[in-house]
Image 1 (cartoon, one colour):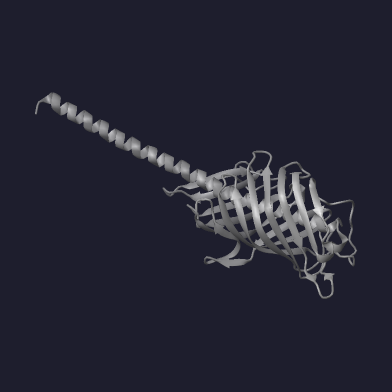
Image 2: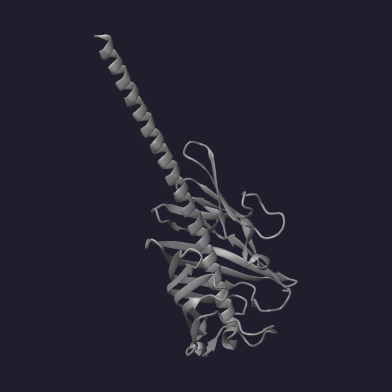
Length: 320
């Protein structure tokens, strides 16, 4: 073989090797990008779902406050004005049977979200005695049924649509009224099964089993969220189901999530973990822009942490 031919063969082999390595690098880069995108979706979907659920439950409580049949007449409630959410129409024609239907059509009072669809509230009703168990009664169970209830975040147009039912048990009784201090926290145990439709029209069924404990001192309200279920081999589970990608996932609350009225009810602290997704994901609430836990003031958002495919630690910080 002459020298020229040998050199050509060497050059060809080198070029081929370069293309192979370039292709591998591109594949790895693409894989890393896809992994980051999928983890961001996993983390933000669950956080948005929980936040939207909380807002809906707060609306339910406020609607009950404005309706004497629902809240009960025997408590010494402190009510400073009306509490009905903005841009809703309430059908109270069946209130004597413990039923209210709420139709949403517009922005919430803070102009952070737009809502459409309807929600039906049903208290326990005894047809034999024609009596309704008020929501303020210890042990009362309120059924909340969502009918194409859609909530859209105005900042970016991201939406979630809910269908299905939740049951809320008022464990110790009482209401979240306007008194500056609660002598005892109000405890709500929430269970249910919801069909969730995301902004890409993917629909999935998610289950819920969690507790919200609402306390107030010096006009500052805190909400502490914990998980109650044992599912898929995990305890302290708050949500489980199938995500957009079709993965069976389980959310555990490893450290209770605490929200505060001083920071627009954004989470100040707490840790959730999402199991069963592409990489096990840890969500830490109440961090600054660098992902550090806040020591004073209001947090920037929450951070996502996981171990990537190549064994390196990954992190993303998301604003509220």
